[in-house]
Structure formats: C-alpha cells, structure tokens
Length: 306
Length: 306
Image (tube, rainbow over all chains, first blue to last red; front, side):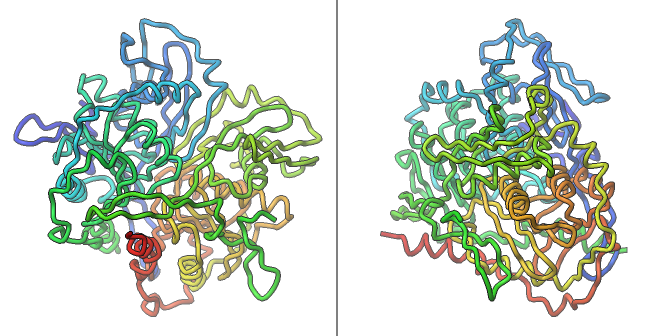
C-alpha cells in the first residue's frame, strides 16, 4: 500500500483517502505576497510518469506521483488498450526512471491506435480512440440504480470536509467513488483524468463492482468525463462544476444520470432524471461556507509569513 | 472576422472579447433542479476539430469551435511544428467536416515527433515534445519588463466584469493577453490550452509582439502553462488559480514572473519577483464579490424555471 493513501480496515467506509501529509505529494515554496511579505506555501508536485504496456511505450503523463500502478492499469483500461478480461501478469514501477510497465498475457500492437489518437477537452490524458465510442454505445447502465437527493448533500459535505491535498495546497482535481451516501475511494491528481483512471485501476485490481456506485468529481462534465464514467459501468455522475453540451448529449445517449453544479443545496440534473429520488428538503441544507473550504490554504499563507 | 469574437476598432483597448451571445457557442438544455423544478440552462458547446499540417493529420481537439484558424496556427506553433519564420501559404477551415488545414512552404514529416508525444497535465492539447524543452531553455525573456501590482488588480477587475461565456454558462477556461493594466485579447475555450493557443495564433497572424505583454489565465499554473508562456516570449503570467511545483521550477529556470491565487487583494508571487513594483495599497482593493461573478449563471437557473 503506497504511503500516499490511507486504507482504513474498519469503523469507516473509506477504502482510499487523500494523503495531504505525504511529503512526496507537496512541497513548500518561498515567495512574496500581495503586501510584499515573504511567504512560503504548500504546492502540489507534478511529475512525469511513462506508461509501458508490455514492450510498447504508450504515453508520458504528468501526475502527483502517488499510486502509479493504479494509474497505469486504469489508464490502459480507460483507453481500451487493456480489456477487463485481460490477464495482468505484473505491474512494475521504477521510481528512479519514473516508469510503470504493465505486463499482460495477450500481446497487442498499438501503433495503429496511437496514430488514431484524439486529444479531447478536460485534463491530462485527454485521449480517446475511435473504438472507444463503439464500446461506449454497447454499454448498458443498470436501470434500477437510484440516487436519493439526500445522498448528494451527504456526499458533498463529507468530501468537502475530508482532509485533502486540495484543502492543503489547492490546484488539484479530485474524483470520489461513492456507494449511496458514503464516499469510498477518493483520488486526487493534477489532472482529473488521472484521478478517475486511478479509481478505475484500483477497482480492477481489487475486483470491486460499479453497478451500484456513484462517481463524484470536482471537475467539469465534459465528453471525456462522461465517456469514462459510462465505460466504467457507473450509472451516476455528480460534479460541483458545470456541463458541456456534448457531455450532456453523450450522457443522455448512454442513460447516465448527470448532476452538475452541486454546491450547497443547489444542483442541476440534465440526464437520467428517472433515477432521482427527492427525499431531502433543500431548505434544510446549509449553503457551503466557502471560507471554510479554502481556510487551510489561506491560513498556511498567513502562518507562513516570516 | 469570425462571428464569435467582437473586434473593436477604437475607443477601447480590446482587440478580441468573448462572444457570450454567439448562438454557436452555447446551447440551452432542459433539466431539473434541486427542488424538482424544470429548468433550462445555458451550456457551452464542445466540438471536435481535426488539425492538418499540409498532408499530415496532427490531432483532433475538443473546442467550443470559435476561431478554428487561430487555434490551428497557435497549436502548431506551441508544439514547435510550425516555426515563427515559416511561411503560411494558407489556412483552410471546413465547418462541415470540422477540419482545419494549415499549408506551409516548408514540408516536414512529423511521424517521428508524434511518436515522442507526451501528454501533460492541464487541459486539452496537453501535448509537448522533447524538443520543446530545448527551445524552452534557449528562450530569454526581457529582463526590463515590469509588473505594477496596481495592474494585477485592474486586470482582475476588468476581466471579471467583462461579459463572457464563463459568466453566461460556466464550465469554460479563459486566457487574456494584456498590456500594462489593459486586457487586449480575451479567448475562452473548454480547454484552457485551446484558449492560449488561440491567442498565440492571433498574435502570429496579426504580427503582434509579446515582450511587453502579460498573460492572465483562469487555469492552474502547471508546467505546460509555463512552457507555453515562455515559448511565446511573454515575461509575466498571472492566474486566479494555484501552482504546481514543476510549474514554479520551470518559471524560475526561465526567469518568468509567476503570480498565482490572484483574487481580490490577494496574490502570491513565486518566481521573477524582481519585476514586481508595489504601487497599490492592497487594503484599498475590495474583496471580490463571488455572488456577482456567479450571478449570471444562477439568475439564468432561476429565471429559467418553467
């Protein structure tokens, strides 16, 4: 288990939580603030990691550097370069040269796919292949999944209050796999697609199902975020941020429940409304205290004055 | 001049402003809000655009779809696939098939470079090549450039109050090229790298110099954002958002002035401090009214209740 994640065995629903205290994930840097005072602030790391599938170099991504094995496996699965039924013989990470090699029984040549590479909007690893849309259209999401509005509020609150790199240093995306009103797996990274790929990798390695899960992201609901959620077989996607039109179009095509702008009592659902169960009184939900959500960063700035 | 941008001839410093009223850039979509009420909200478009350099297909990016010619030229320049001294024979955009072809006098084969492709953190087109770091290290930024803190405050205010797709629909990044305390070129896109590439393209096509300019971005100060700013020869980069450690490292290596977390009276400078001139009293700067900045979106939600 990497330093960079804290897996709780009992008494808590968490499987993976952020590791804001991991010295490998943030650095303190000295500068000057708006009053000309010396400050040193916590800044997230950003490192190159090169992914190999067997003999083939696939891509170099920029990542905070935690969980390279989960990131590699999840990336390859989300790119359809690995199939769920592929036998993974081993995943080797060499932190000296920042390389991860995933070895499989099945050999494939990806030159052709790599030439068809498409860079999409959204963050790092914004890469899809033509054949991803085929598998997208074949995916059938569970119709019986439900989303109680009380879960949206409970999840937002739990995630906002969980110690994280975001609260410690900012400038980072988070993705959280949830079950009902409980967050289970909270991954952070400089690119939110790294975060969702790390979740995919963790789920695959640990054999965790997705049909009854909810994906929460701090990032925007772009086409790529929707495609990855559907590929993972997750029926519900929630974001604090907004939508793109193609993201909504794809969500409707796949029957994905898509909730955006989820802050405080507010949210907007633009797809998969039939799964929504209104069991909470929005007027009982307090507005988010933005100062609290940012406090840790601003306190650091203040305390760091020298 | 594309529909999607408003070029002012006189009486205003603006060369390019956002076009929130352009019907091609947003769409109204119907859904349901936190109270179960029907709403329809403005959502930004996201379309594929495939870039060709002469006979070579380079990449397909997701973009809002304005200024495809600027995006294509700027992308190719920022990827070092085009050189500033290359003669561009023509830029052809076909909106039926969403393709842009840039034709140059010099022919090059990019197969080798495409194999060295690196996907980096940050948003769409997160792609750099090994040789970009070489040109990065060769770039010398003007030492005599200055940044008065009063300009930071004036620019933030002007950009926040300028009608934009962000204010109309959210879920979009903005990049603004500025001169002293005046914003000149404000580009928005679903990926902030599209926005900065469109600025690079516009500058190249219109022969505008960068040595005395400032780049303002709504996005994070990642390695790629710093690399592109330095490649463009811009000595100062300002963001509302935070830093990554490698972004700061590269800024210090290049002598780029790097200002982050610029909100209200607050900012933090982590590189190129010698260019900073403290000529404003931060306590005279009002904190940003977050409600104002978000009002347009929330009003739309409210007004759209049917």
